[in-house]
Image (tube, rainbow, N blue to C red; front, top):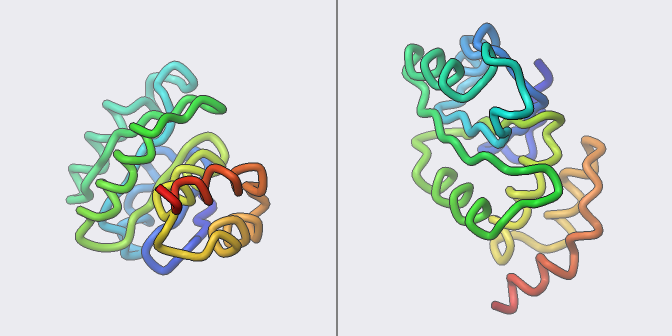
Length: 141
């Protein structure tokens, strides 16, 4: 498992397994967001199995399946809602962490400077510069 903290309250990661969840909880995360569709992964890592394992540990588990390259504003709104309703730090995962970073940056539009929304994920290899016009448009409303 490779936890990449974008902020003190939001981290992303490539795909995790149920065996990673105790360490995620021990690291202080209270909510886990699954940004990966079941069709991409084996049954033992799909949403139902991950939800059961997370909830057994007292973690809040949120499903917000984002199709790679085809995120929607509904995905952005769902991520924002999950982040806002979390009772502590949020841990989001997908295949590489990129989708989680994209959805975070879009959900944070207007809350942080655009350069920060692009620069923070870039420290972990997530290139979001192509989203600058979309982030700026969201800020303008």
